[in-house]
Image 1 (spheres, rainbow, N blue to C red):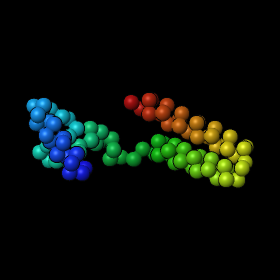
Image 2 (image 1 turned 30 degrees about the horizontal axis):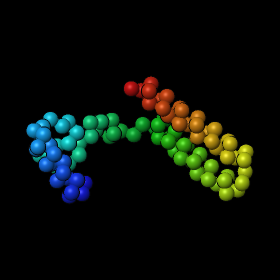
Image 3 (image 1 turned 45 degrees about the horizontal axis):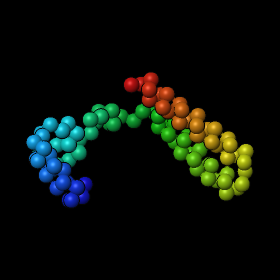
Length: 95
């Protein structure tokens, strides 16, 4: 975090009188604390593979645009929509 933003956050929280009520920003340790820290420590394989598939589909769309292949663009778009939909559905199921 740059100095100007950090000074603004400190001065804003002191003026508002709630310097210790923020659950995600600790003024004493001066670092960002994620509320989902425990979930971030372990890597879940299914969302990782779906994310890699979605990125590969986006890259394939770019390649097929360069190759001027409408079938490839359409297939990659369908794969991208399916991967993103499956990822969001998986996220909703696991919460």
